Length: 465
Image (cartoon, rainbow, N blue to C red):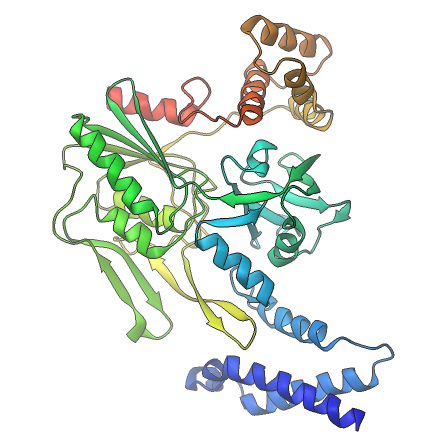
């Protein structure tokens, strides 16, 4: 009787798999790629799962085995964006796209395989970007960092779902995270979880002549706020504009299309192409625009600019509407579809985005017209920087001097240099400035002292070169 019950369990589990993948496995294209039928594969899967459940030396949880089978299928796609989502993770993703969720404030992705990298890819989950004004941002986590360990447990081999589960928890509870940064630098941070409310837009005017618009996230609330800022700039007679999508991980397609529409009167914004050609779409701007054609535009990107950020950048660049300044963007030009199951879902890459000129940025990104990169540190400077992070020297200085004066900062720089901890004076001063801002939770809209990319954009708009 017990074996009959176990068999019924596996029949029901297999039925879920059949239902989820019937469209894919039974399609003529899929059948043409193998001499075996989809039914044969499913029978083998059912048989294997039944034998494991009934005969493996240790008792096996059906849920764990089922999730392992699903994860195994998706890992063979070699696509970091296609994955199985259990009910808890699905709820987390829904909260995020709505613009509010609980956690530490990180956008993460599994690193891609890179044939030019001798290591292929690091076996850790990568930070696409921290969300401003959140625990991760206040702790100094940067785009491009890796989650090296969580609560002293190595994160090697973790999926994005594994990391997300561990980082989320009860608000006001702590989680200890070890970060891996370029140069092999590792350091620990303690993140206090909180309910995350994702900001979308910040704006200001630079030097009384340049409108500055930072788009932090593309949510349903972003377009109205962008339009409000643009209309304000127009009413002030500003004819120069900087759009900043650095460390913007993307968001909703409808949101970015609506925002791009503000800059164009007709014409292609982005095309989407799928395996089945009948699904292909071309998104075009409607007649009329709110940004005058004579407004000179610069858009800022970095390695944390992904997906919807790249759609906006690609549209403005290809149509000759903006000059791109910064560094090559992240390179996420693929489309994911949520396919519901009984109590979970799968997220599957089903198509790709193409810019107006027909360029797909997936895995390559968008190159800037004007590249601005941070100067590389020497080995000695990297080691000094690592020591400052690991010993939390800057944090201790801010503990004693919450709003340090210029003389206090000068003395701190001198002390570190005397001790041989010198990653460069400008690096130390920037670390002090960022730490002070994080403690006060009051990041400036713009940084006209240390932001070399922004300064280059201002210079370009002032001089035309």
